[in-house]
Image (cartoon, one colour):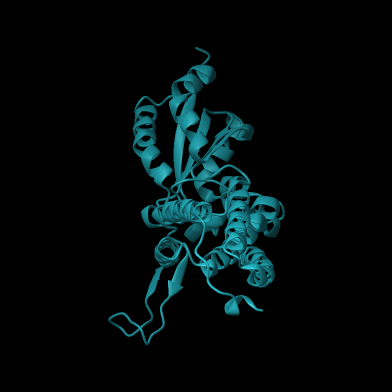
Length: 312
């Protein structure tokens, strides 16, 4: 007798509670991910809407930020999961969906060695967190589906989830990232490429006559952490320039400007903001690099850095 022909039985209280708790967890994760994309969308990932749907005043296709569309889809999934949490097909679908996310996150964790951007610019999780979380939700969803007596369909779900994971992994491999950017530029990362630009020529020329230690603050207007730090950095830049400090200076570098002028892709930066120091001879100090929220350590330590390099 197949599953569809089996008499329907009421779910036990343990299964119902487990399904409800897992639905709440999945809802929280997807809502947080959607909020991250809505609050701090990537300004570089866009989707061209079909012309039959809408066009601009000149009849040209309209582009929208992809993160807005993705966030909308995540919120729809939240509503479906919460309203249909006692349906076995819901958990088979959740398992398949998160298997695809696990394949995507797995590529960035083990191959690209960078963040997957699953939570937009709101939060950069620890390495491997997204991949592990996605796998955990896949496993828990299958357990709940099994408890709901979805035994035959569970085998179909395993096959579908495997295909979804492979698809997610493949899609991630097509997304430009810091590793592919470095590989395509003969092993030179974004910092090297930035230092080769005309905007940094005066700092490079310090090799001939010496100069102050420079802190380069690389920021992105779509990064919430960057925007929180920016007013503090701007004040420090103004103070150091006004006093013509001979020991320590700060320069700000906006990622979009260098995309246009020098072709340094936004994805070439593994984390935003990125802060690095250049010594008095114009050489990058590779042991003094801060990225993401760790850049707050630089912000709070500016006075200490100034004291260090001025010999005070």
